[in-house]
Image (cartoon, rainbow, N blue to C red):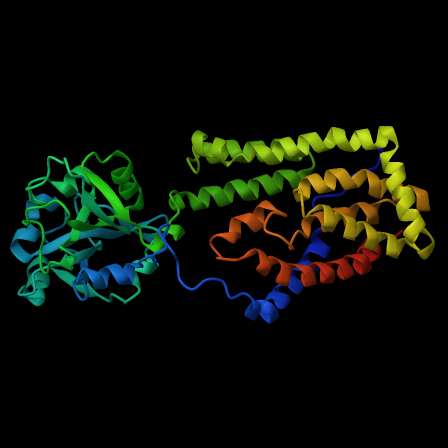
Length: 444
């Protein structure tokens, strides 16, 4: 509306890099002030379990094995059900490590899964009397290292959960083998608790009773399906690692490609930024990084409505003289002291407004005031507009100042006071940097 040329895509980069470096060093120095809460708490207030806790509770320590299939093994090309590994060796195959897209992933297995050379079997050896050396010799398997944190490291591909039968389930009294749990749900039951005590050894032939708690292992997606669609089971407990599990992590290369493409299109200046973003979103859907339902749920409608409402509100301030009134007040306070003080006042105003509304809405509201202030002082509007952009982005003082702050509030177990203690001093530092650096990059 003002007829001025806009900023380029990388106009803010030099200032942003300085603030980034400053922020890293600031957090390294001030991190001792962030105490948070000890441990992860479930909704009922109890401490949530980890993979390590579940393995210990169900007496599974030392039972897991990683065995690589050598070329020439009789297992190559054979189906899991045909090999009868559980009956012959007490070996329950709960997953297979296999190369896929330049990295090893853990693939779910069921009765019809066929094995390949160099597959690495993840096995639960429930029978203590089995000769592992004999098993590996007969099937041409090579033992691989299994570190203590293996399951935590593989939390993207393999999950655990505690489940129980509902009271009117038709499966009560049947064994795991009889209900074909692995075939029906693509999950493995590796542990069972009865009357609060874990049963040792294999549980596949144990008749399930009401009140039994089973530990299932498998893909997170299958666990979610069991919780959502399972008519006989209810999921009682999900470990902490579920927070780190991404439902579509295998699509990460496609998502990165879409991001790079969007930035490249924005840099060409041939395609408007909103169109470039829409193209990237459509490609995300094409590559199945996200579905339509998730994309719709990701839209934060209150923010959109607030921003759309702020645009006519800012225009109304201009038409009614509200902007001139604010600018006159700023001129009375800082007009005679030079543009640097005016930049500082604009920064403080943006930061104060950002305590109550989103940073984007703050920028929309303050931009006309900054341009009018520059015009009144007879200087370039670019440093004033950039200060508004940076001040609106420096929303560090409260959890509600920015959606990003709200996003990390829960996972980081931060409190409102944490944002105040850390955010207020850092906002002042950013203000000093911006007021001194922006006029160097965008002269008055």
